Length: 128
Image 1 (cartoon, rainbow, N blue to C red):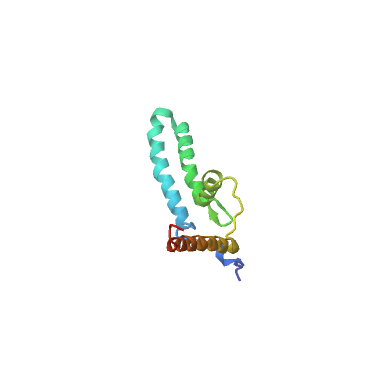
Image 2: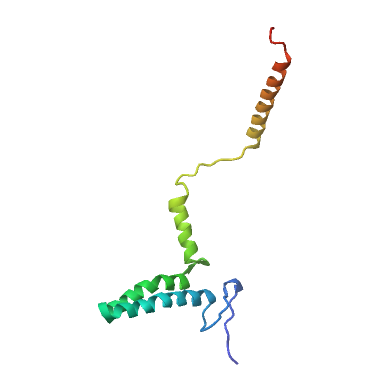
């Protein structure tokens, strides 16, 4: 009888499409191949085979990283976007602010009193 390991957490199981790769991995590897292989053939004559192969690997490496790297269930582009948001977009210091209901009521009471004063001041005669 064959032994087949079954993972306890089935949320981490991904559907394999072809060559034991997921759709995401196939798309990323295909994109890397579409850019890297023509680059190799374009650089092979002027720069030599070894330099062309190194350039091809350097160009294809980001695609392979996008396909394979995951941390805590998040792919690389989500991790990079989170880093950019924290480091660049959002402010460095975020002060703690609450929406205090009591302060809202006080402001509303102050505005109501101001409106009441404006309305009733017009009712009084101007000469007195």
